[in-house]
Length: 166
Ligand code: ZN
Image (cartoon, rainbow, N blue to C red; front, side, top):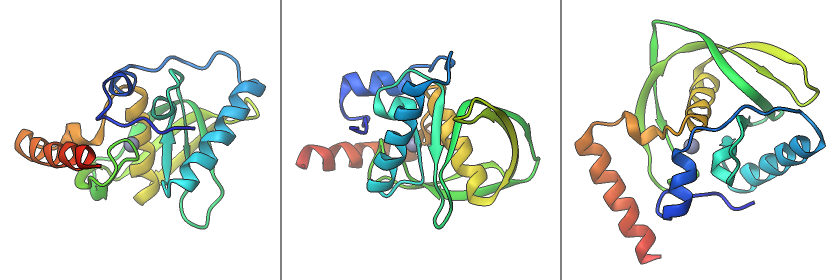
């Protein structure tokens, strides 16, 4: 699968769209999720959301180092801590750009797995950040949206320049 990036207009449009609920967790969704896991792994990513590979469906995959991949279908955050934590985030759709983002430190998320079963998970640390980052993708939000205007403009301008330079 090709990973969509923000410097290509048609791809940016998909990245900015709100994804729609998955209706059936069928063989097609299973194939897509497996494909997304291998795409993420070969790109050295720790998370990848449907819109990043051109899908308009609410699913994402996560794989932290030395752990089994997780698949989240129709995910919803059902609780967030007041405590915040800050991580330097990156994104396969804005390769090479990194910035600190503050988010709730602990979240509770509910989703469906590939067997069509609902599950609930409390996540802290990096896992919490990745889940929030990926869920944002399903709503058309990019991590750069959290930066100040000045910082975002500077980083995006640099990113675009590097992409043009090839
Ligand atoms: Zn991302």
